[in-house]
Image 1 (cartoon, rainbow, N blue to C red):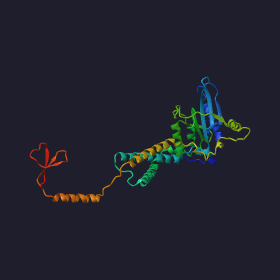
Image 2: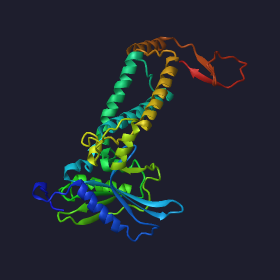
Image 3: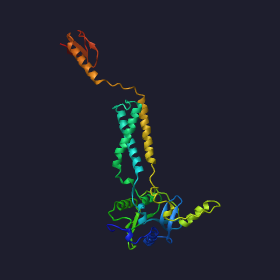
Image 4: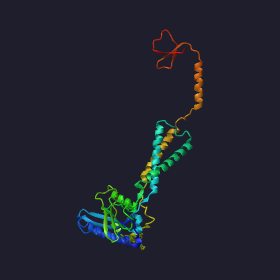
Length: 354
């Protein structure tokens, strides 16, 4: 891949042409796979849930058992390169930061509470709750810079769409001018995620030749956690939409990139925040329990340190001025004071006041 690319001075390959070329290559790629029938390929398919595939390939493995091998393709040309470039998901970053801050708040307040280190609400209820809230916000602000470089927040549309459905093989095909070089940060991140999730990677060079950069993983990297969807061609989907409106025929023009406003819809496959919200809710309940328990404690009276030192000094002076009256006896392990007698039996500690 050249160090720099100028797509204006090169032969442009559209996404449709790219999909046709790549599907033709994939048909030959799977030619010698064990099968029980012919290979079927189709361009521009979409599921009822809105998932799009620029190319779809399938061939039966065992017709009696209904087993077949499926492969889907995401074809991206220069003009739609944002589909393969990562975007930072700031919403997810913010939710993760606040989740971590709430967990830290529970840990620290729980530790202080059970060790009687501090009284959480000696400043007053509303003041203490305000301080707690500001502490959580401050902790989240401190956590964000540490989370920002993490690759968890690098969202690639094509990869996220692949996560939404199951296929035996998933491929990404792109034209040579999508990335300026193999050292480009967007290409390196795409390659890393393709390896992580077992996605194949194909490049079409300026001479329209296919170059396989990665092959799909043979094992499912998602541990079978994806749903199986049924794809339909654009024509069939258009008919389905028209027939769904009883008595009214609505012409529907559909094409690969026209199925949605792709530039405004690249982030539609972002992760949900159910786990984080569940953790935050749990932390709020625990903090509420600490607050409720604290509210039933007797108020703590704090000693004036200067007054305490003055009182102790005065007491010491008074003890030094007292007259000695001889020997005094204190029972061991007892605060009972007794005078010396001639008949005592229990052991005593003798304190000479002279």
